[in-house]
Image (cartoon, rainbow, N blue to C red; front, side, top):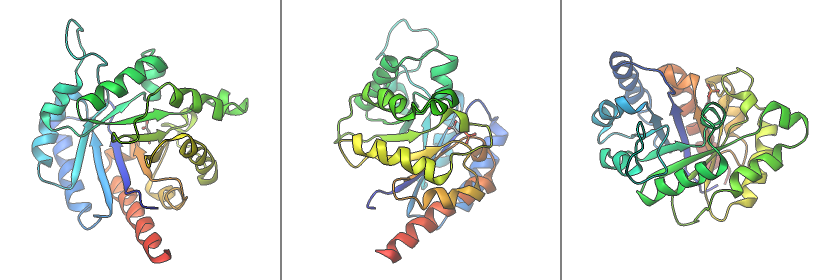
Length: 250
Ligand code: PGA
């Protein structure tokens, strides 16, 4: 696998200036020596300045959790991709299931956000995933295909795909490595280029190695465990170990 692994934290609506500083300090110390893995944290908007200053010149990239599909204008409460880019932001999560479910983001809106992010030079992390109801009805592939097909993917523009089964997010019940691998392989076949496909949903230091050993799982999007430095570092180390064992094996 030539794709570089990515482990990205999604802090969601958590943090404070003091907590962020302690977390970033611990992460920077803890991820030293894991160069084979790209690491990032996606912080709430008000903390992007703090995060960008602390991480400048470091191996830890950073991103936002949402972006407007519009360039500018009368959109109260929204933040444009160009504004994020001006900070030096690299990533932005689009289409997280919490945005889709709690804020009514449609496939079309997610697709517009994805395009706006790329136009501004950001790398969108596009989330797709089925609900428990859809999985139990045997509709997993249909749902993730619909979510992915709504988005115009240019193989030359940087982007990351995250498979996040809704039933695994924040529940402590991760997809088994085999369940995740099956969906990743399905998604991979639909992609035009060498895009990374990461898994999200209750990834912890204890289950990360088994997930990252799967051939089509290129890393993780980490919620709860990204708020605890030792847990996040453990996940990054599991990704580094998976990358190292692959080099030995090839
Ligand atoms: P979780 O969240 O790791 O807490 O399950 C993942 C996500 O929502 O991206």
